[in-house]
Image (cartoon, rainbow, N blue to C red; front, side, top):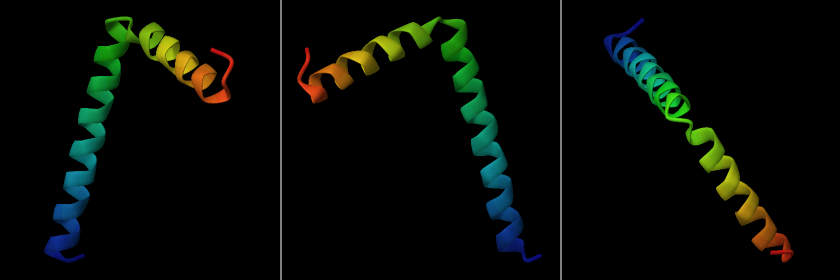
Length: 50
């Protein structure tokens, strides 16, 4: 493995860890309900039912 490959892999792992932390933080704040509510409104607007 080259140094560049190792550096890229470390960056990928750090990004995945940070992403998981933000997902857990949003879940703890009960933002799942907010995201799903917005998704439903967007879908209904795209279909033309809302």
